[in-house]
Amino acid sequence: MKAVILESYVMEEGDLDWSGVKALVSDTTSYVRTDYADIAPRIGDAELVLINKCRIDEAVLAQCPNLKWVGIIATGTDNIDLEACRRHGVAVANVPGYSTYSVAQMTFSLLLAICQCAQRYDRAVKAGYWQLGIPAEYGLLPQVELLGKTFGIYGYGSIGRQTARIAKAFGMEVLVCTRTVRPAYAADGVEFVDFDTLLARSDVLSLHCPATPETRGLMSREALAKMKPGAILLNTARGALVDEEAVADALESGKLAFYGADAFATEPLPPQSRLRSLPGAVLTPHIAWTTKEALQRLMDITTGNLRSFLAGKGENIVNP
Image 1 (cartoon, helix red, strand yellow):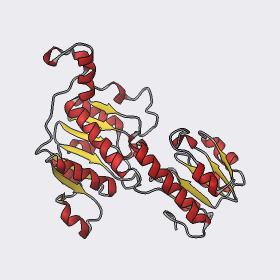
Image 2 (cartoon, one colour):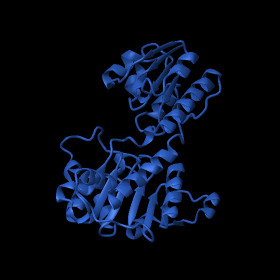
Image 3 (cartoon, helix red, strand yellow):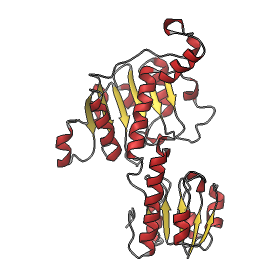
Image 4 (cartoon, helix red, strand yellow):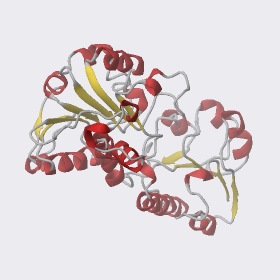
């Protein structure tokens, strides 16, 4: 069998490596990054391909008749036409749960950067300033205490649930909007509400759902209008969930106090994005999933998925 790694940058040499995959398939070709036009030519007659953000669709599949398995080195499958893969007999395996703790941690890193500005104060102190003598150019924001605030969560998978645990540890009231309320959630100490209630009551609203036809554009102009004046919106899930132009307008008008985001509709974030210039936007480069611990789990599960498929089983198949 032949395997092709189209985006090896996900596991940088010297940090984690691809030795587990290559031990399973000796005939493995690796590319650091791959543009869409090069996907089909690089897959060629290989049966196995590993990707992160490369798009696999009908046009690619039609040119790769030997392809049998796609291993996505991520949890989300937005970039893969699962139905087309099913029609072509191509199994798609993802990596669920590897970044749960890291993404939940980043959610609160963004929130704390907004509420207490530790990094901005650090720069100011190292430059010789102190307390009320810090110049405006450091962009300090009003200090905010989280105790007693209402933390809203849209989507209650593993990351949403872990985020709820952290919010409760800060003494926040937690509201959750999710499609399915499971009996196991009864002990979580959260309140389940509909979307409009979530918008109306949340001081902080955090998004933790995949981008699907139902959730794309979830945070529309209309949804933002229903939020509390001066609320905080956090997005460590998918950029497609948010109308970024509407968010920029809400920040400029004061309807939203802050927007903390690690995911964007177009990545890298375009130079012309208004979010880049707004002081109420705190932005990170889709980096929440890249702690060393999360990457180790990512590689371990990816290798396990491949091993299982080669053994005729198939773990974490998302298009059975």
